[in-house]
Amino acid sequence: MSGAQLSLFASVFLACAVEAVEAFTIVLAVGSTRKWSSTLLGVACATVALAVLIAALGPALTVLPLEVLRVVVGGLLLVFGLQWLRKAILRAGGAKALHDETAAFEHETDAARRTALEKGLDSYSFAISFKAVLLEGLEVAFIVLTFGANQDDVPLAALAAALAVVAVLAVGLVARAPLARVPENAMKFVVGVLLTTFGLFWGAEGAGAAWPGGDAALPVLALVIFAASWLIVRDLRGGRSQLTPEPS
Image (cartoon, rainbow, N blue to C red; front, side):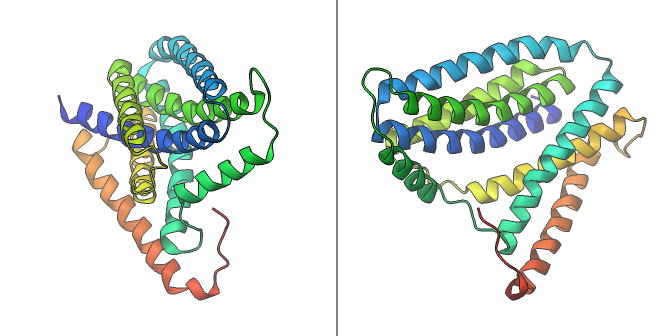
């Protein structure tokens, strides 16, 4: 596996693992509180919808000229990555509450218990699980398609995503509890840096810029973005008393 393929695999795996953890927490809360049959049906339907989306859009992206593809993908990744990075910086700096899977599990469990249970197909269980898997899965599909199409290796990106989901499911099924010990906040910080790095790199290349050293500039760019982000975190921590924490 080349360096470019390894960075593609690692980036997609980490990003998709984070999304899988969040979806798993919601599905576990609803399924264990209400009906597993309706919950799993929602998961299955959302999975089919996502598979169709990837199968339809994947080949369409690969036919775009490389320069156009990199500008489009770079721009999308930059917007997406900066959103992740902004939230991660605010959480690390104390201006936003850290994401807590245990708290999220309890919130979803309480909401599920307050709704009357239906006979037969429980529409609440179906709708919540379908929505959770579809929304988190759309982000996974976006990451798979953008990274895979730009590197002309959608199968490798899809493999990384699938392994991330399987790993989360395996750990979750063994624990039978929300994955609170997964360092999700740190992973989101790293993913935000990676998505922003690739977005800048590919967007600039698509616009005609040439990076010194080619692909070797990627780790340097990632370090610069990480260092700048950490300086902002330190600044936020220094002025924490003047900040009003945002909701998680």
